[in-house]
Each structure stands twice: as structure tokens, then as C-alpha cells.
Image (tube, rainbow, N blue to C red; front, top):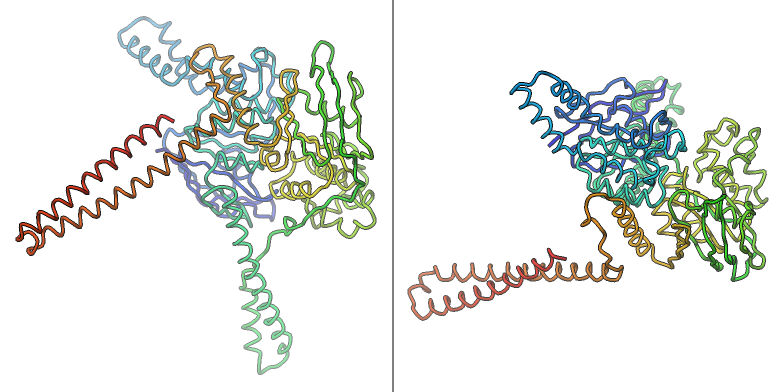
Length: 632
């Protein structure tokens, strides 16, 4: 098994130590989510172990021949190639073999050359190099490209799609260790579902950074938490990690309070007896004690902040009515004549591939895009709060962060402004920053908070979770759950959708499909659609076509498996009990008073034979169930 060992990783920026004596071991079975607050050093750690930056100290031991691939969070620019050619660089590891094959093929024939050519061809065949076309196309299709995109120049695509191409290349490298920094940032639900499945079956070790809780739970079984410049390993999923972290923080807070009390007592003693000669020795001892005291620090408490929406007047029960909506850009039809009604308190998630018209639909509903046919009508007393992906452009660059929010806050909300900013990751001196110096992500968070602070009873939110960490998403999620109005939103965060949506509107192939209620049902149908989409473009394997079992059939199959598994457990327990009874009878038969008495020994042997028959029948029942279970 291949391993990667990191020891004593230390890295500083100026006087600030970001990573201090970090050590951990990875195997090719590792499935790790790297967690930590913004600025804790997650991206820095991945860059250091990938060789992108040089830390002050780092010892890495990697199994000979093991390979590493790294996907950065952003700023990848690909130029001058087609989409297919850019992704094909994932097979560059075979270049030396292909070049050697070309040289040997053009050289003078010899037995030695023939043997080497045969060996290289065999290696390339086994490695999948000769089948790379199908692999490349399937990965690109899974990540949201079409067959028509394969020969298009990458320069035609947005930065988000260029990141998808970079992700495809990294996946196709099939390295022994895969480091992914926010791979889900530019993916829609369909591409995210594909990536999740791909990583589940990936043969190498994986370390990833993500703010999507469901994605982490479905792909990882270990959490590496960066905090206070150090790293701690937690076994289990995100929920388990969160529970353990909360317990640790509670203990740390107790230790902090105890230390503060001890510090206050010590400082009081020093102050009281500082000028008494008879106490000079004790005073010096206390001074040294204070100097040696290792200060316990607490993380920001912004995660404990709750956020609530300003009160807004109640709307009518029918909030939004869309009739016969048709939208097209020239000959490109986005959706063709669909209708639906949104009721008060609905939480409607709009899903679909990038380019299917999700943001366009939100713009139409919000009234900022009038170029459509059909009718969009609002119910009585509807007040809209609309967060668009470009809402950050409305921020005044001359204001401080605090001034920007105070300028639109209701008078009664002014005392809570700092807490609200803290909930959205603006704390301490951050609130006094000029808006002109904020990053793109910071501006987006501030713009979202501004929208949420307006009294509205219909919230229209386009990717509100894009620049939020898991803690802030949870604050937003809890606030929307308590919100008494109506919400229509686009998000690619599965946890956010599954815990909020009461209805899902799926834009697909110029149509609008509606799914009421269960996210699990929609997710099941989505996987079915994705599998069908990929199989229809598969040139090779007809058997790869999806079996069209219904959702109900799938649920019934899982229930049968659970029942069989439970029954098998009960039978195995019965078999173990019977084995103990047989062993007890054997021990009984070995006693002199038993084996010397013909009547007694016969009775013991008859009982033993009876129980052995019961055990044999139980084993037969277990085997039959086992066969059925394995065929499910």
C-alpha cells in the first residue's frame, strides 16, 4: 500500500505562524476533509505538501513511485487548446512511453526492439491509455460539457468552466494522492453528483477542502481540523466531528475561565505585595509563574450568533403565478411555455445544469428581465428581496463595512448590526475596513446580508451560499427556516437544499419538471437522469444503460436488504447459542459419572444430535438468505 507521511510542517507569513509542527499520515485508502475557519491555512497546507510553496520546515516521505495531483481553488487559466486536448493532459504521464514507442518503431528492427515494443503496448493497454478517448469524454460529460464542446477552444469558456476542465485533467491523472481545494465551487448539482460518485470509487488517497457538508459526508470518513495553527484528526463524518469539536471547545472554555481566574489572583498578589521586602521572593516567583503560563485562547464566537429576518407584512396565500412562460435568446430556447404557482411559505429550489436558465428565471421573477412571453403575476402585498450573483456591485466603495450595513438597517436593528456582521464573517477590525478593499467573496457576503436585512416576504436568492463557510451557511439556513415568508432560490449546496427545499423545480432540456417534497426522491431521479445521459453518449458498452427501476422499487429493494440483513443477524446469534449448547453437552459427556453410565451418555448424545440438526437447519437458512441478500 502506498503512503504519504508529512512531518513537522511549519509555515509563517511575517510574524504570524499559520501552520506549526503539522504531522499526519495518508494511505491510498484515506478519505480526508480538511476543515478550519477562513484564514486557518487550509489552502496553504495543500500548497505546501503539493510543493507549490516552500515552508520553513517540512519532511515528506512518499512511497517510491507514488504520484500526487493538486487542484487549486481558483486562478487557473487554460489557453490555446480544445476542451478535449486540455483534459487529455491528464494522460501526460504516459508521454515518455509513447515517445519511446515511436523511437523504437522508427529504429532498425531487432528482436530486442520487438520485445520492448510488445511490453510497452501491453503496459499502455493495461493502464487504459488506448481507451483514453472514452474516459476523457465521460469525465467531461459528467462535469457538464457536451459532445459538441469537445473540439471548442477553452478560451470560449468562462473561468468556472475552465476550472471544470482543470478538475477533469486532475481526475484523469489518476494519481495515488489527490489534493482538491474547493472542487465543488464551480459545479452545478448534476456535476456535483457526478464528482461525488467518481470520488467514491477513486482508487487513491484523497484530501479535499469543501464547504458542502453533504459532499463531505458522502466522500470522506476522516476530518483533519486546522485550529490555532495546529492540526487534529477526527474519525467519522462531519456531524461526528462537529459534536466532538463542541465538546472540546466547552472544555477549552472551562480551562480558559480557570486560567483567567488564576491570572487575576496572581496579578492581585503581585500588585498587593510588590513593595513589601518580606514578600519579594514570593512576588518574583509569581511573576515568573505568569511569564511561563501558556495562554489559552478561544476561537471567535461568531458561530453562536443567531440571525433573524426583519418583520415584513404578510402576503397573500398565492405569492407568484407564472403562466405559459417562454424565454429564448435568438434561436436558443431556454424554456418553452411552462406554468407554475408558488404559495406562501414555499421554499422552492431551482435546479438544473449550468446554462439551463436558473439565474434567468430568478431575474424574470424578480422583474429585472422583461424579455419573455407569458405572464408573471404577484399575489397581494408581495415585497421582494432579491440577491443576484452581481449584487456586490451595489456596494458603496467609500463606506466602511459597518457603515454599509448601518445605512440600511432599521433603527431597532442597529444594536444587533455587529452581531449580524459577525455571523457573516466580519468581526473585530474587519468591520472598519473600507468596502473598496474587500475581496470578491467578502463583497458578496456583505451584499447578501444587506438584502436579508430589508423587510421582504418573498426572498429570491441566486447562489446565496457561494462564499459562506459551513458555520455561516447553518446560520443562514436556520434563519430561513424560521422566516415566515416565501423563498425561491438557486444553490448547488446539497445540504442547504435538502434541509430547506419543500419543492424542487428542475430545468431540463427546455422543460420545467416539478418535484414536491422529498429531496431524496429528487436526488434519486437526478442520479438516474445523469446515468442515462452518460450512457446515451457512451460509444462502447450497451450494457451500461441504466436499469429503469422506479424510486419505489429501489426503496423496496433497500427494505428487503435491510430485512434480510436483520434476519441473518438473528440466525447467526441462534447458531452461536446452539454451538455453545453443543460445547456444553460435549463437556458434560466427558464427566466420569456420565460416560460410565450408558443411559446417561445416550441421553446426552441424543440431545447433542438434536441440537446439531437444529444448527444445520439454521446454517442452511442463513446460506439461503445470504444468497438472496447478495443478489439484491
